[in-house]
Length: 121
Image 1: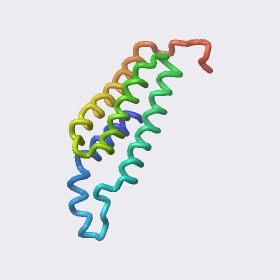
Image 2: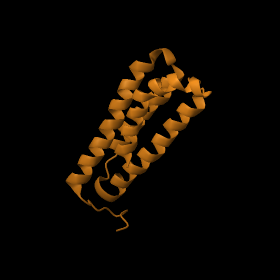
Image 3: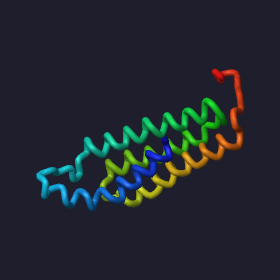
């Protein structure tokens, strides 16, 4: 689910400029809508965190994917604050987020239920 949302986020970032340019024809204006962008970041953070938590709790118990994901989300928030550095902050954000989900996937496949005392199964 986390990988799916990350891909959706990448599609959102790629297609949004095209879609937004046609929205004024319909009387809709979300260009530079801070609420919308922060809402998308919050949604991505919630879904991504849940996905990483599942892998952490049930499989590998490694904090590395969480740390990388948090760094990526930090870059996304900073991108919203410093608009003139948008592209320079977006690229590392996407790289960190994708890398975190990739590592989570690899760790889950490698460990396949590495049980600890906090496991509930």
